[in-house]
Length: 133
Image (cartoon, rainbow, N blue to C red; front, side, top):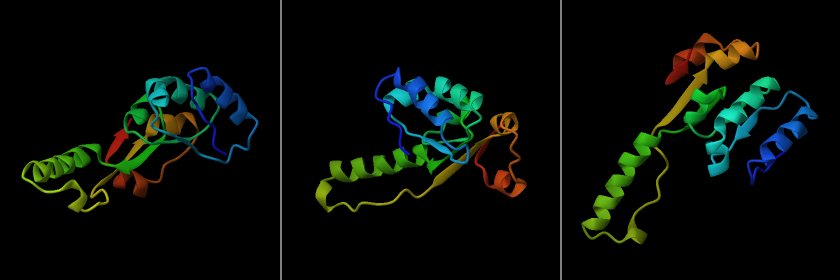
């Protein structure tokens, strides 16, 4: 079920609605400007509700999100610079190929896992690029 947050006031309503849903689902927190600005509030409400969260920006993990998995933003920026260079050297943007990200990152918040009563397997922790203790 997708719950839209268009205004900061929608955050509390979305979590009230989630409390009435089965607890087996993981919430994916999108990277909208509102969600990003209120990431600490979202992480706090999720933790209070016992809801594990999978977020779309690494900064959410430091705020208390359980997991982040996505493209490496520093790698994307470096790769973008290569495109800018090619365009400045005369390449037509329409002629440049569309490429998938080359590097992905996985972040885990062990503090949140512990608060939720979850044990993260060591094999998963070994694959993590960043672990919040």
